[in-house]
Image (cartoon, rainbow, N blue to C red; front, top):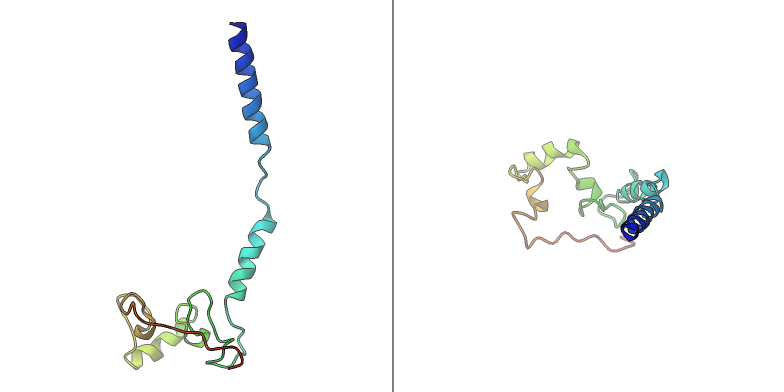
Length: 109
């Protein structure tokens, strides 16, 4: 009986110590994620079609990213370049065109 009580106390102490050693998430840990999202988008003043004109979040030119800029949708629809099923330009729809390669222009372009 005495051995069982000592074992129980040791187990409770060990569990308590293990739960206290975990750090609470801090606000600083989410900051890099926010920075990465901002860095994934091109600045507003870049030359369309250049290396810097790139939406890293959606892997298309930023100047043509309808998911980031819904104001672009009517122009794609007007030219018949629209996949209504997936809600993005047909020229960017990898679900309908799995062999489609959207390549970022090289640096210096």
